[in-house]
Each structure stands twice: as C-alpha cells, then as structure tokens.
Length: 181
Image 1 (tube, rainbow, N blue to C red):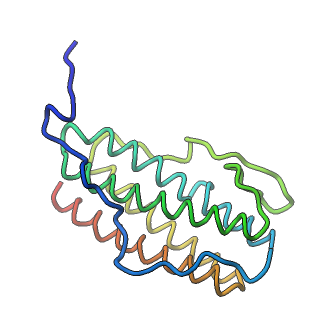
Image 2 (spheres, rainbow, N blue to C red):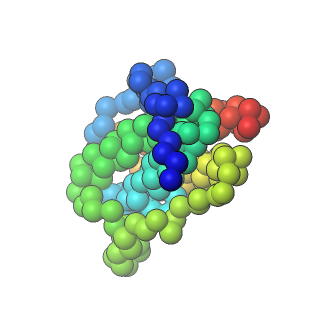
C-alpha cells in the first residue's frame, strides 16, 4: 500500500490564517434575551445552511485536496477557519439571547432537529467542490439577510452583517479558485 504524506508532497499549512475581511467585528452583545432570535440563529449555527455545515464541508474538501492541490487546499482551510470564527460568534449570540448551544435547531413549535452530515455536499472533484462551496456561501448570505429582517436587535444584526462581508469575500476567493481549476 502506497503511503502519501502532505509533508512529503511539500504541502505545508504553517502560517495559515482565517480568510476574513480586514475589518473589525462589532462587539458580540444583545439588547435583551430573546429565545425566538436564539432559535433563528441556531439555524445559522447548525442548520442545513449553517456555519457548522460550512466548517465540516470545507474541512472535508481541504483534506481531499491537500495532496493533489496544496494551494487550493490552503485557501479552503483559510475559509474553514473563518467559518469557525463565525460559528463561535453565533454561539455567543445564542447564549446571550438565552438559547441552547447543542447542535440542534429548534423549528417553529419547538420541534428539535439535530445537525447531520446529510446536509453536506461532497462532490467527486475539486472543481465541483468549489462550485458547491460558492452555492453554499450564497445560500448563507441569503439566509443571514432573511434573518436580519426578522431580528430587531441592532447588535445582533451588526454581527450578522459583518459575517456577510466575510461570506462575500469567500465567494470572491472561490471564484478565483474556480478559474485556476
């Protein structure tokens, strides 16, 4: 059995940093506890279109690409790291709003739905991975915009608006990868 090591192929992840816009994030705070808002953010946290799904999909893609296309894998890892930061900020907001952080989305009526890997798109090649990632970023932006219209808390919406800027940046990076593929 042939062994392959990323280091043997010259792929190093030393110095990898999150792919985020060079802008500060607003303070993570809320005007008041609001379980309804926490439930909305749980969808962004761990729903089908969510930061947890994005992190998991990007890490899977990075692992699958690291031996064949190191520069692409590095960029994918940078995006995954940014999504981890978003996940953390959403978790803080959910807690501040009085919600639970348990990888469960609470649908209207309180019915819980646990995150599942079935939410992921796992294409067979790098080009299709990138296109799936672009579509996921667009869906995330659309969902954040919809939630911002439903949430009447300027502090929460400021964090969501800042996350959207990173997601738009990710789309730009992914388009560059698609052209290089």
